Length: 143
Image (cartoon, helix red, strand yellow):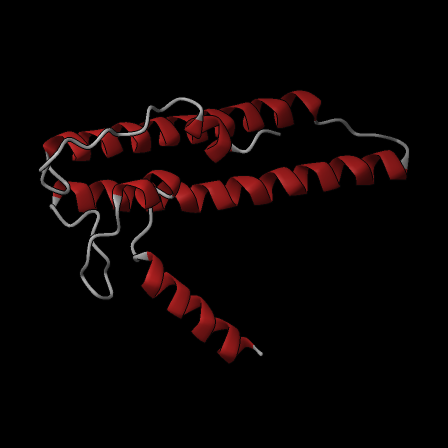
């Protein structure tokens, strides 16, 4: 199964900043809208293909090991779809941030997240420094 983020990243052209260009101007916001809408569309296509696959391949195998293998395969697909459902929700929230002119700025410290980081992770809400600190805190609390 292809990684949907990987397939998405094959389809976009990196944004070329012009000298003196204001951060998160309308052209940049449109660039990220396009990326996010494409990503969401790909995720929805994956959902449709999973539903079709499960309906077509659902069989009542007499052999318990065949039945168990199919159930495990379906379980893995459903877990993947659940992660993608959560991602689809996050994409929707990110599109709202764009519409509210709040996209591209760290929700913790307020600085610019940066075009390249957002292209790598379009749903990022933290700058790299705040994300690093959050991960360090998470490791300390988790151990």
